[in-house]
Length: 302
Image (cartoon, rainbow, N blue to C red; front, side, top):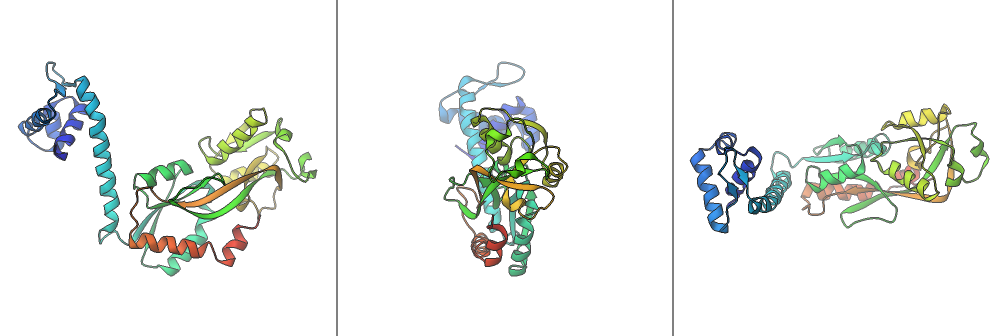
């Protein structure tokens, strides 16, 4: 079985035409026909029904397609991963971040890293949430990413950046500002301003509201943290955010939750990633960076 045969087979399954497949792959039609017949002969099965004008997969062909697609995807992942070792890309780290950390954790990290490693480029992409960052890293489209997760969840391919807590953000004249701590039972009739539904913050807050027996009244979802903060200050609703993005704010009141909500911020890389020299340098830098007194004072004080 050859990789070329799998490529032809997957393309035929999509285009349902030998001639069109040959054109797309820039080969002759007899080459495609010969490769598919050879594949069928090796397997001892008929994979393609040629009795109609548009070819289609047999039941055996549909089953085999799942395997062929997985092999093709694995080959592409391997290719992307190996690109890191080429001489023309060794000085680049492809890095992903979710909105929550863009303006808070990343600028200082970027500045410090570039001062230590001026010849290494951080190619930074912002994604909609931590799950997308993890997915991209797992597919080797990213070398590293920053993700948010529960304080008690971690994997071997993560480096802890900080553990923080989430607090409730209230308008300055809100009745709950007089309480030392706030519980979710107090929030039944409140209007919530949240990040997008697929984000860590939204899921975490929504689940805690459900546990308290109510569905949060979400008046606005936005990826812009500045918008969330200003709307809270304007009295349009409340929000629940990590302390590292709110501790310096004076336009609203921040109160701890009675039942703490922890959040873990980590550097993440793909489970099957082989670390290059540049990758190892970056991880070592992150370990030292997050252990400095300045970082601990700025980000780890709640």
